Image (cartoon, rainbow, N blue to C red; front, side):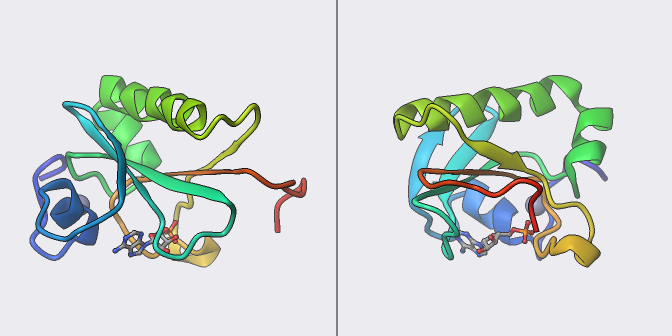
Length: 117
Ligand code: AMP
Ligand code: ZN
């Protein structure tokens, strides 16, 4: 069921505190933590605590929760004093999605090329 915790999901376990992470911010509905393999000086993942496979599934099933995730990306940027940052939602294995629990990458603190690779 969309929204229900999945036994085999890494980010459900981080949301539940069963696996440690460097948590930057937490709200009633979201957790933000530093990526274990950072691609920029700031590389934080913002996840909904509830399980949805990707951004579109999240936005369709729980639009207010999707807005919570987006709002938190700005809060993370404020915390790291970033004027500019990039939000990435990889969707599908073909573009590198490896964890199928919706997450926003918040990237910043260095120049980022456009278009992205
Ligand atoms: P994606 O490739 O878009 O699915 O992003 C998954 C991200 O999760 C990757 O950038 C990984 O480096 C990151 N990641 C995997 N395991 C952990 C972990 N235990 N703690 C923090 N970040 C992780
Ligand atoms: Zn999950």
